Each structure stands twice: as C-alpha cells, then as structure tokens.
Amino acid sequence: MTTPASFLTEEMCQQAIGQKSAARTIDVEKGAIIKFAQAIEDDNPVFNDDMAARESRYGGIIAPPTFLRSVGVDRPTYPFDMPFTRLLDGGSEWEYFHPVRAGDRITAVSEIADINERTGRMGLMIITSIVVTYRNQFNQVVATQTSTSIRY
Amino acid sequence: MAEQIYWDDVKEGAELPPLVKNPTTQQLVMYAGASGDYYQIHYDKDFAKNNDLENVILHGALKNAFLGHLVTKWMGEQGDLKRLACQYRGMDIPGTPVTAKGLVTRKYQEQGANLVDCEIWLEKQDGEKTTPGSATVALPLR
Image (tube, rainbow over all chains, first blue to last red; front, side, top):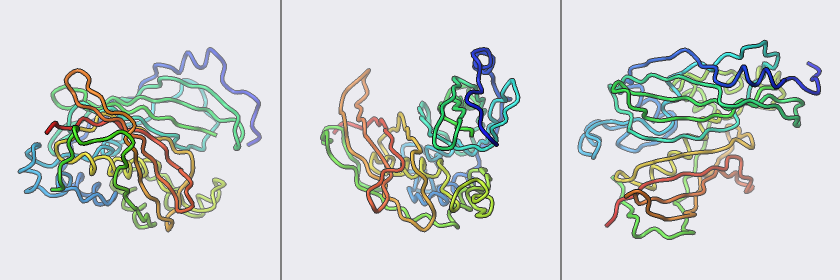
C-alpha cells in the first residue's frame, strides 16, 4: 500500500475515543494458569504448585501478572474503515489492585483512550491507546492495562 | 520459597538479580497457546517475511511476561506488584538470549505502603535494550 501523508481527521479521532469492545468473561482455570506459567518459564510456586501456594499468603494458586492477556478481550472497533492492516504491539502499562485466583470469573472490556498518527520508518502509522479494565466476580477491578497498538 | 526481601534493606541504585531467558520457537508456540495470541508473525516465518520481518519475532506480551517474572521473583511472596510497564522498542527473535535486568530508582512510603520504583528492561547480548520499562512494588517491613 502506498501510504498517504495523513489519514486521521479531528472528527475521526473524536468518534474513536471512548469506543468500547463487547465485554468478555472467562473462568480462570488452575490448569490455564499453570500452562501460562510454564509457557513463560516462571517456576514461582504460587503460579505453579497448588500445595505450596496453599501455604502461601494467597492460600492457593494465583495468576502471573500478565496472565490476563489470555482473557482475549476484543479490541474496540474503529467507527470508520481502517485500511492499515499490519499491527504491532507498542507496549503495555499494567496497574494491579487485587490478585487473580484460580476459580475467579474475570470480565474484561477494552476502550479506545486516545488515537493519533505519526510517520515512521514504515510510513504512516496509526497509534491507538487502548485501556482494558479487568473485573472479578465481586465487581472489583483487579487490573487495568493500557496498551499502545501501532497499525501501519 | 525464595528468601523474602524487605523494604528496609532496599537501596536506591541497587540491581535486581538478572534473569536470563532463552526463548525458542517452541516457547513462542507454547506462549501462543497459553495466551491465545495466534498472530502468525510469532510462528509462521513466511507470514513474518510477508510482513517485512526477517524472522518470526517474540510476542511483545511474552517480553512483558519476562519482565513480570524478573520483578515478582525479586519482590518475593510478601511483595505486591502495583504497576508494570514496558515499551517494545526493538524486536527480539527466538534463538537469541535476552536478559531481564532492573535497578531500584526510588524508595518511598505513601498512604501506608512501603513502595519501591524500579527501572527494568530486556537486554540482548550486545547490550541493546529492546524492551525498556518500569515497575512499582510494595514490600514488607522487617
């Protein structure tokens, strides 16, 4: 694709900001936590070993900090056609409020917090800041995740 | 369980014990399965090449997880991770080791919590920092 000099208008940005995804809910299975810990090669007993985790202050297995990625919440859809189909993850900032335990039911919603464009090595890039809020079955916010997605 | 670190004993400027990771294509597939991120640039070399990449690349989120491992291992069972941030500035490929490193940048007390800020990053063998970030943890008192 030959990239234009500019794509986003002020109006498009205003329409996009505040767009939310559908909510996604998952039950956090113990086996899923252990598989995740194995995949990232983190052998911390509180993420892997139920007996050891029971003796910890948590009283059972908890999820590693980035496990909530596996909830697989959708990205919010843009309220306009998005011709930039290549996607890179620019980074994430997580804030944590409560541990995520095996057996929790987590509901996540993502929302566009900001959108802008920049010209870089790969031509015009659309940079979207997306905030995901994760709540547990007690409606406590367990974590928020602010991610930067780069489309080019 | 590893030995617990206490807020009282932490010094600004101190290093977190480095953590070496040797990501392989197998690990990328395991991570894809465990996280549900099946974007093909992480395991399909042809797909990656069609996206102007020379090879499959590590998931940014896996690098984020490596940094989470670094910090949660250091803070111990009594520590609480409050914040974890990183930026994916450079790409990392399987078969190339990366080391997760960190430095204590600030130690302070706020609203009854004993907090420590750290600068954290992933570093290649040539010293390039592909994934700079930061973290805040609460630690117990002695």
